[in-house]
Image (cartoon, rainbow, N blue to C red; front, side, top):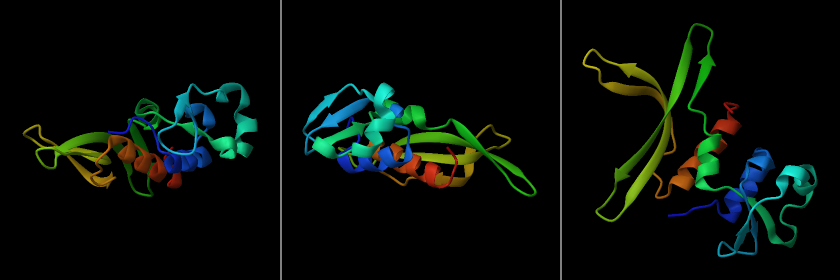
Length: 146
């Protein structure tokens, strides 16, 4: 299981997120490189222009990505308001493989107390939770939910 965003994910997130949200800096040309604590706090405006030079990239851990996901968001429509709440799910795909899904849906609780989600927005099943979190953050940013 991955612990940090890969280089391509890091490049995309650097375009759409504040660099201060990254909790590491990746130094190197591949994913087996050195991770260091970031120095973005004081240099984020300078760094934006030279990400990739000398193979320096911001990097997000799973914890940093999870902190970026809202616990809920609300859509106000012409005739209704819908609140979407997060659900993070882990499924057994095979005996050896688990898959993950991050979803937002409006909650419905039936008379038996069973909770179900409707109007679901989800990542589909991903073998890595970091990939699901990355995909959901990109979707939320593109759709102006965060």
